[in-house]
Length: 207
Image (cartoon, rainbow, N blue to C red; front, top):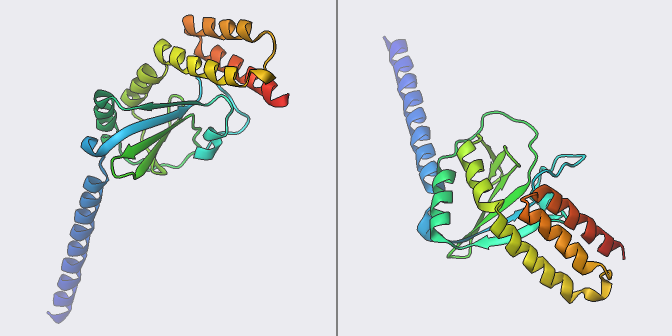
């Protein structure tokens, strides 16, 4: 009887331990959710589609070190709300594999804290450095919001001004280069646009 009593106590202790762990995990995930009202803006730093590299980009710095990086900050409340809803639906991946990043998303809070979410081109999601399960809805959302003709025109317009400020190192064919790249945007050939701009930037850096 005494032995059975000891076993019973051990079983109860194990059950209590499991319950406590589950409660703590539940609290952690609730605290880990993004709260849209606390977010000030979302900054995206990303590469044009179609870029291939010899080695996969597995760290934030690998993406940020690329020459043709696009940088844009979004403050639209509707966008932030939709983005946060999709992020809150993510679940942690129980597998380990080599991912290849193309997009860095920095979520800026009103209290000046930041959180980071990274994405591959059509798969791979890292939330605060933790690998998450892929979500097709999230990638469709990013495609629709980031890779649009309007945002590329805006971004290239900014690049144009930036290049003009450094016109002393630019070639005499700069205006022709600009129009060539702009035509890629008009035709929605964003991959060709990115490659073209990258080649021009490389030539400037060499000079």
